[in-house]
Amino acid sequence: MTIVLGIESTAHTFGVGVATDEGKILANIQKIYRPAKGGIHPREAAQHHAAKAAEALEEAFKTAGIKPSDIDAVAFSQGPGMGPCLRTGATVARTIATVLGKPLIGVNHGIAHIEIGKLVTGCGDPVVLYVAGGNTLITALINKRYRILGETLDIAAGNCLDSFGITAGIGPMPAPEIKAGEGDTIYELPYRVKGMDVSFSGILTAAEKLLQQGKPIPNVCLSLTETVYSMLTEVTERALAMLDRSSLLLVGGLARSRRLYNMLETMCRDRGARVYVVPDEYAGDNGAMIAWTGLLMLRCGATLPVEQSHVKPRMRIDEVEACWSS
View 1 (spheres, rainbow, N blue to C red):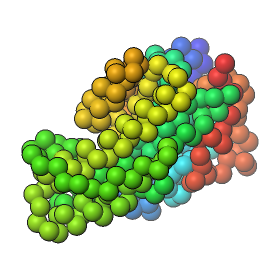
View 2 (view 1 turned 60 degrees about the vertical axis):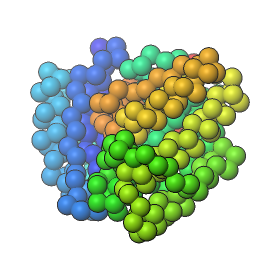
View 3 (view 1 turned 180 degrees about the horizontal axis):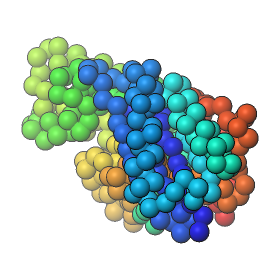
């Protein structure tokens, strides 16, 4: 049995996961940085990760029932993400790999979200909607690469909803979606779909102006979530039609949204397609997804010398060859 240790540290989560080549997740430990106010402060988050690393590793080995010497490789999130956070995780991974004399694997964070979703849902060759606080894109595996079919032109959908919730004083997601359930009026907001791409910054500004005008928060939340989710559903349907695929995989932190899932499920049902959604425990950033994707990469020899293991804060998913795919 091959065992890989995964280290996730792209943003607010320091995660440690353990996966086997049998597709089993033996451990998935998360230590989350929560700022006192506002959004993520990269340096503070990195300091949090450094402080929690030993504790998270100890819990992961204990949960998995293994010793450090039992692992066959160490994988880490190489990018994209916040530089200080990425460097902290990479340093931890390099240290473990060097001390134990194990291979080191640099994993693309976005691809890891997709591969853990495929593993736990069992879906075959889907169009993927990846929506999170820092990323929003539509992709599919074509000729051994995840090709970007559409993406946000500015901020991510999750960032849009989080920022609005913080400005409104109700907190980030899922607060805006929960509050939307109390709304009864939808205001018109900028609907920015440009081909296969989307734009959310104008919607966020318009929603914040409605708050300044004294509009009820539940109604603004309802207007914002319905507009954002409708845009995502439109471009996702176009991707399904373009590739003529019958399955859709929803991954990323915003995959926890029940309303977004319902919209996508209705759209897929009308098209004779099926939507799969990653379970909540693997929707947000986690070490298990890094461990599993690292294992896939290990199978085809995609390891890194330590001296070439620099982090890539702006790394894109289409930069990586999916050598493990058939």
